[in-house]
Image (cartoon, rainbow, N blue to C red; front, side, top):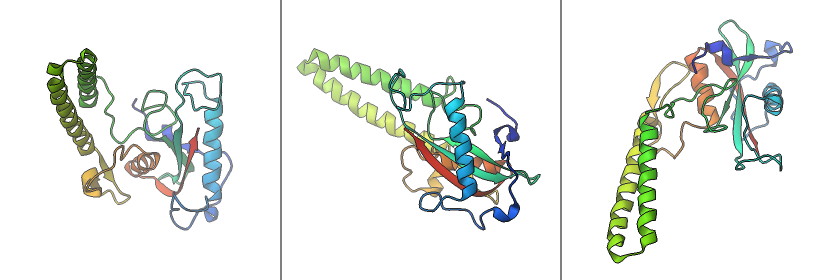
Length: 220
């Protein structure tokens, strides 16, 4: 899904004075949300309530089918090079089974395309799991040794795949300097880079947008 930068940019409908912007970037995890952030979050929540492009069971409707999966969303208030004020939106991980949707900035690293090493690796892990299950159901002494070998292989493959994913993430800061995920974290946590905030900042910096403030919220 290739889009022009400003297709992910949602301008505020109401005029906002530059003097009302926060003096510094707000800390997104422990702070009183800035009114402009709340305005952007409310705008996104309204969009989520009325959009018809995809379906995701947040657990808010008892009659909706599918597994209930809560989701974290984020908004980042930004100013474009043309001094237009608006916001970017993102979600953590996948939404409705995909990691790219209109309205939301793309992932920092997209490993879900057909034939990607992520999909190939996940298919191999699934195959190993199925083989382990089949052997365990037979419950023979001979199979126990085979199961242990397969469990070791599964662990090795899982670690290797996770390391490949970590090596595929590279982030830039507002000055345009780049660092890999392993340079930022000695031992990266699982899912690092898939949260809303890193996606928002990466997209803003890549497209020369200035982020005065951000806000995250969950829908579950």
